[in-house]
Image: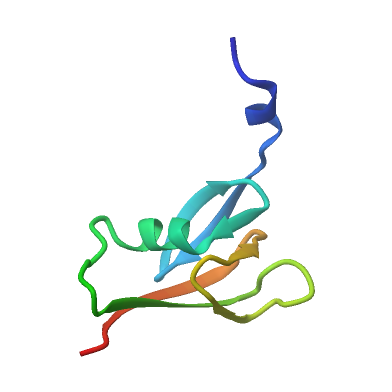
Length: 87
């Protein structure tokens, strides 16, 4: 039997690093964006990710997403996810 909550989760098309991705729910987290951006995210103690966004839902339509944060999405929200080596 299908979960009713799943039926109510609206699918939204967003852009991550120039590629269309379909997500469910009204928000997306920092970690979810890293997973969408990289099939195999780079790892290591000096790797950090920077996520910028624009055309988001709500009172902060653009900015930089901090690790542990999330963003309210709408159709066409654009994310740029980059991995950098702090060394």
